[in-house]
Length: 80
Image (cartoon, rainbow, N blue to C red; front, top):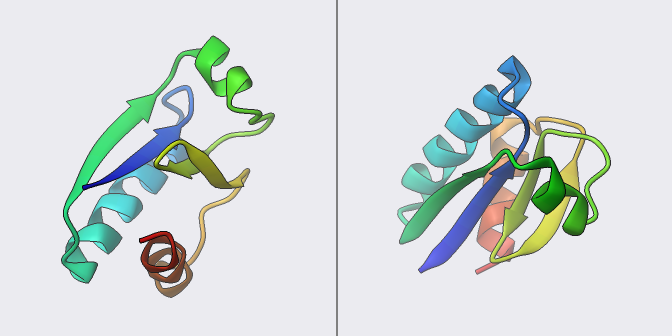
């Protein structure tokens, strides 16, 4: 099962990324678990300086942006 982690403090962009990641994972039909990380200490420990960010299985894939749906699906699919 893939662990999809959205990092952010709960801003509108962070919430938008969370919804987009969940939609992309459902479209891909993968087994996944969603986690929202809003603790600034944990975000910093993961090396993220700007949010929103996405980590897959603990590895940060991007930060400071919300990719288009197709790009997001590609990022998730390549992490399998």
